[in-house]
Image (cartoon, rainbow, N blue to C red; front, side, top):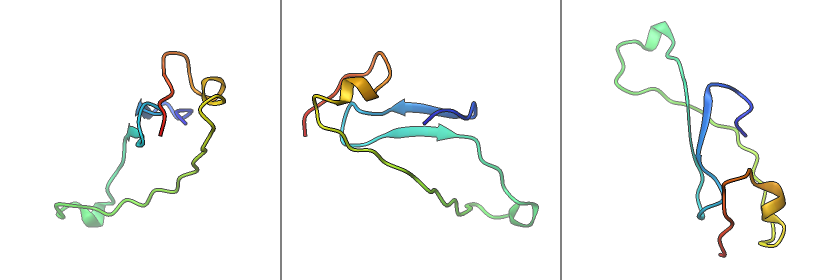
Length: 65
């Protein structure tokens, strides 16, 4: 869901994966590390192919699995 203006949904409903991007920050104590751990908590919805057009934003097409 892209309700947060810092989240951009790149792909959702076109394949068996979804792609998105969002801004993150790094704590000051981790500033010298090359990588940081990010935890994502996600809610997913599965729909039947004939129901998906009602759930997806305009411009996206449903695909069969």
